Length: 307
Image (cartoon, rainbow, N blue to C red; front, side, top):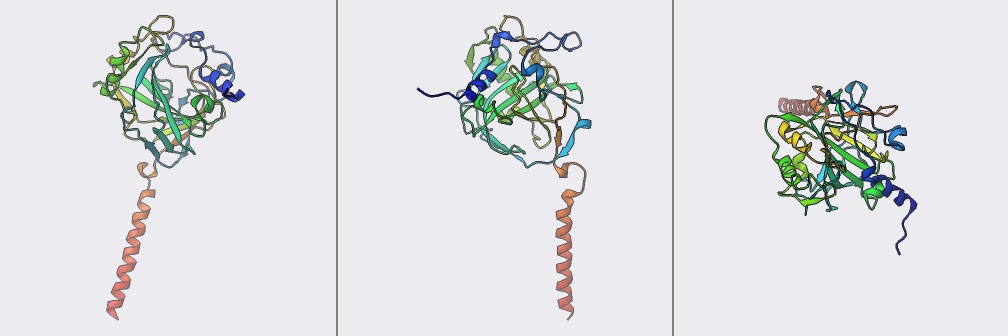
C-alpha cells in the first residue's frame, strides 16, 4: 500500500476543499459585492491573499528573462471541459506543456485553465470583463496538490479580456461546449474543437505584474507566484453574458465568480517590462558601441593608407 505524506494530505485538502460549502456573494447594481466573502481559515486570516488591485503607483520596476512556453501552440490533448459549479475548467494531462523563465526560477507544468467573470484582478482599480487563469505546478512536485503545500510551488498566469466588438473564436470553442454542461455542476464534455493555450494569451507577454499570493478559491493556499499580463485580449459582450448562464452547485446561474480584491499588505508588487519598449536609450547602447567600433576601424585603416 502506497504511503501518503501528511504534507500531501494537507495539500490535497487545500486544493479540493468541498465544493458545496462555499459560494460567491451577490454583487449589487454597481458590480460591487454586497458583502465580502467569508470562507474561513486562511481565506480570512492570510496575509498574502489574491486577487489584488494591480496599481502601478504601488509597484516597483522589474526586469526578468523572457518566458519560454513549451508546446503551448499545440491543441490540448483529449481536452475536456468541466462545469465545476464555480467556473468552467479545461484540464491538461500532457506533462510536456510547460513554462519557464520570466523570473520563475524553475519549470512549471500546466494543470488546468479556468475563467472568472468579471476579472478577479483589477488594474488601477479597473475591472475587466473576463479573466483566464492558467494554473501550473513546479515539476519538482508530483502534482498540483503537493505543490500547493509549498510557497511558490504553484505558478498562475492571469490573462485579462476586454470587451470587443468582435467575438473571440477561441472562446467560442469553450462556450459551444459549455452549452451542453452549463446546467449540471460536475459534468464534463469533450471540447467541440481544438484549443491551444497560446491563442488565449496576449501577443505581448513581456509586460506584466508579478507578486506572491494565493489561490483565489478555498482554502486560499498562499503558494502562488502570480503573473498577470497588462495587455488584454478581446472578447464580445455577448460571450461574457454566455458565461453567466452557467449554473452553480445550487442550480442558480453563476452571475459572477470573482473574489473581492485583497490588501497588498507588505508584499512587493513588481511591474516588469522590457527596457527597449520604455522610450529609454538602453536598447541604443549596443548600436552606439558598434558605430564607435566601426569609426575606430575606419580611422585605423585610413592612417595606414596615409603612411
